[in-house]
Length: 115
Image (cartoon, rainbow, N blue to C red; front, side):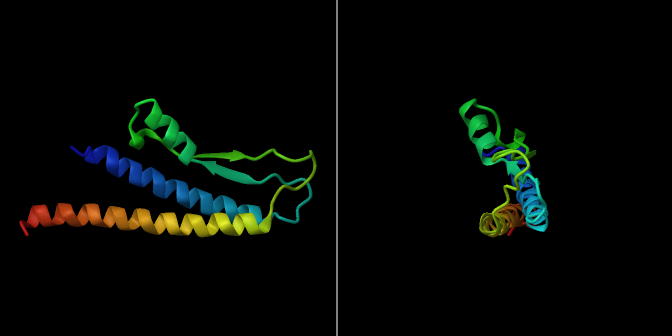
């Protein structure tokens, strides 16, 4: 049986993660020439994997924004092509999750309307 509350919570958190990932990538691109700037990244998929392995609900996982402190101190670690790839992936995943949510609510609407 599908846990609809957990499923919709997961979908919402995944959409939130993609939105935050887009914001982080845009911020990173805007600061690509700022000396010493360290890029932002959003953790979600690895936290989701950990939750599943621990037997927790996927709906309990929320995205986490963090600073990527890799690279030498005082050196900018933003790579434009990587940030553009992050934007592209976030767009695709966001579209997929929106379609998933639309399908879910379409099924509910059909059940309510009896069609």
